[in-house]
Image 1 (cartoon, rainbow, N blue to C red):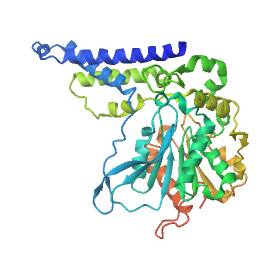
Image 2 (cartoon, helix red, strand yellow):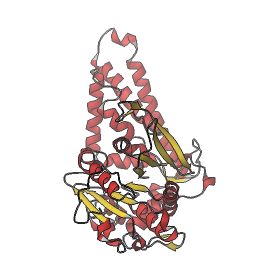
Image 3 (tube, rainbow, N blue to C red):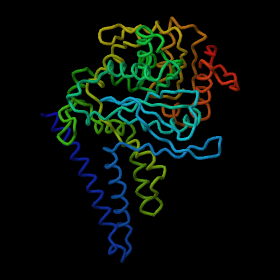
Image 4 (cartoon, rainbow, N blue to C red):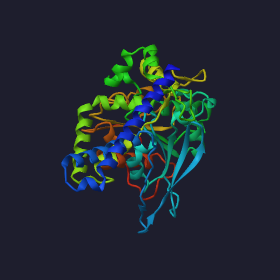
Length: 428
């Protein structure tokens, strides 16, 4: 019960702050307050607006809010989001561009389950939609999943990816971003033995911890310094009475958010102080840069306790992927069995989450894959976010990934340009 109490206490604090913000906003907005202009009341109203919005966003799953897509026909096309596979812990979604012929590039974007929703990849989705038939993994908030649905750990996650790949067929190209990189690699290896014909056409791994020890960061240092017992006692709580998953053990989103913010406390404090001043001066806007970023950043989701703990123990501490000792349901998963799937690695030179070296370690594990099927790209000056959603992604990495997909498609387009090698292993 102590864990459930902690969960409900955190939600009570969040709810109270949201209420205080709404109250301050309402009080500062009274017409009577404008009779005698007072900068202090303008500041109170602005503080209330920013505070209410911030704490309200923490428990709301963001909408995709995808705009119309302009295509070669000169028309704007709406985007429908349709579930292809619906499961208890996550769905496979299809971004259907209405009125457009099916694109030859079929892409599965594997979103992280690391505290934020799949909408964190909104910019990645928008950049790929015009050129691809795009699918994405949409992981559910563990607080909303009844205990009766059972557990969900790294093995279950891997099997979900296996099922999604089977559903989409062997002509799909998989792009895994950050946390799911090692598990996407494991899922492909699992298929290589179980159903080789169901393997994807290519696998692009972007900034993920295949071998965390190849280039240690603060994230890996934290994982190594904490025992599993301490992590269970300090990070794991039971979902409170407010949600359908009452009683389920989780790593709460609010606790994760506290950790995210504490890493850059001064930066966040300055950002919120600046936003309050802008709103008090009438310069704030509904979709300004601050709101666009923090509406997504503050929207956090609970992870199942078993997924979080098994990730730390098996991926970071025991390095099962890096040592090729990972197993699913007692069955060894041998990464060297991947012999036909082209694999491309993308890393950012300034990535402080998955530092250069962690992801490219996958190529050394692919001993059964010829060098002609391997490629790697290190993006100069790019941080973690930039390699999948920033300027580096848009201008440099995305074109390389699309070229890689075309080069490893069964029937590349006749007018497709010959891809430029990412390194000596061009996979072309």
